[in-house]
Image 1 (cartoon, rainbow, N blue to C red):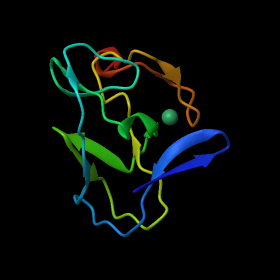
Image 2: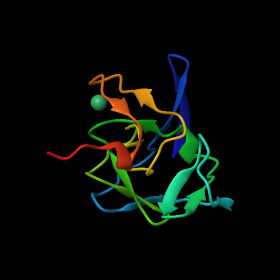
Image 3: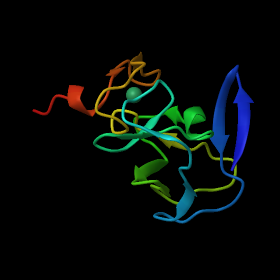
Length: 116
Ligand SMILES: [Zn+2]
């Protein structure tokens, strides 16, 4: 895994091949009861402050998902692919809601999703 700056935006990219379902890395860091703009929610009242996860960008068709503390490949990955999350799935309420650059949807967390 490596940090890459592209157009002024930092992202995390793979440095090797990963198979679908394979562990990319494990989230490590202080756990807080409340979310911060950079934390990842790992259970109802646990938000982990991982040094690298804060650089993972949003994508509506993400390359990775989080299961507990594990960051898992959602499909086969080649080297130099960006690790992305669907941030709508990442937390009940995002501390820093934003408009998705691919679809223009407001991304603000699971609790805000409308199911029809
Ligand atoms: Zn989108």
